[in-house]
Length: 363
Ligand SMILES: *Cc1c(COP(=O)(O)O)cnc(C)c1O
Image (cartoon, rainbow, N blue to C red; front, side, top):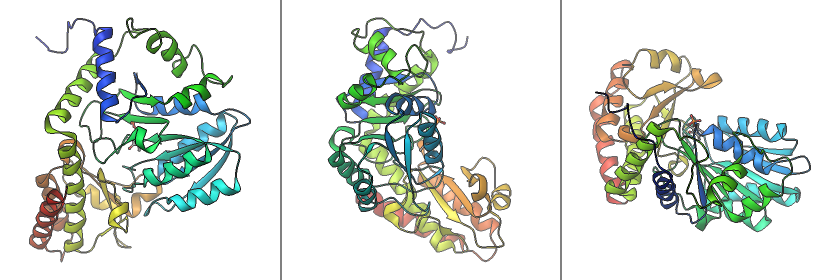
């Protein structure tokens, strides 16, 4: 008797209620569309909905996803200005303001909030303020920040905010969501190149679902993923969002402090305020290949080498979801100490515990 089989179909009312819970999590009163696929689906849908020949986009690249967004934007015929920031830091609002000042035609900005792959996070409130003043639409990839750090969609002026369930929310992969502001709907509706009668069409969802009163679902929803998303939203509400965020912050602080006490490895992201709460990236010294080191660790630990060219020099500790816990951080530090001669496991454990307590106390 599998609990995953023979379920009654998910009703429109259930689907709408889950959308409303996501809206509350994002602190938005805008429409939220839940998309039946991984988070790249709403990210691509948002870009294809807003971009077109004749538009100019500012693509802020602080990790690997920015590259993907730039390719989609160019594929839509938009002019693209890439602002590439070193992956060991963060984009700054002044930098963004300078680009906007010399490129007055920019009408769309894509930004990643936290970068799970490179371990940095960007000051969205400040960047969004200059984007709003310029009058451009802002698309935010908040897949790795939702539930790990504050995400104030409406207060910040984020027009298209994309999330997925599988990172800090501790929920399912394969279902995702995007909030769409009124300004964004106007722009997408006015875009003749925006997808229609397409799996990538946000307008289809607006017409057939949102504007139709959310009483009849246009497609059979991915039922297991929706139920899992609902359960993880309820768990975050029960634990409280603040406590979930605090746990992720503490995991990052503990990992950084523990690694500093351990020696040999250094936090890849230099400044604590630029470090993402969802994952901590570490730099290996020259002569120590990160993928080789990762290969010597217990595969059950949430540690992997950086992607692509970063595999030589970057180790990534994924402390999100249930892994945002002191005992997970301690297990990673213990394993690293055992793999790295001359490092002091006890000192690292003490530093991590102290940083965890301090971070929780100030949340
Ligand atoms: C994980 C992640 C994604 C991709 O999410 P999928 O659901 O795997 O498509 C996109 N952006 C960021 C910042 C991520 O961390």
